[in-house]
Image (cartoon, rainbow, N blue to C red; front, side, top):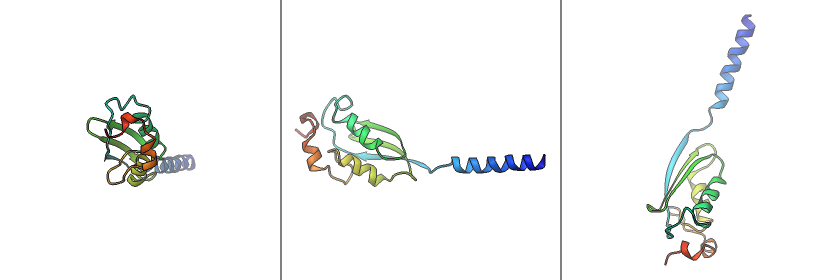
Length: 115
């Protein structure tokens, strides 16, 4: 009986140790969103969500077009703020100090570009 209790205790300790994976952080990324219907636009909101979610460990993405901010909650052991910013820049939007890819920016709808 002692062996059974000891085995169960060890399994519990190991399983809780493996269940704890990386901390989560939330970052606010400054960008430039020019259209007034961003979250419905197929090039703005939807592509921003898809691009950010391609990174591992993304928990939450909130786009605030009025504030020109993207809030991203992510697991620190799965991705980095630099990778998240780069994924946004790769689809044509500035991400803090990383400028948008010129080619991706040119492929955005006219409403998504600076007028």
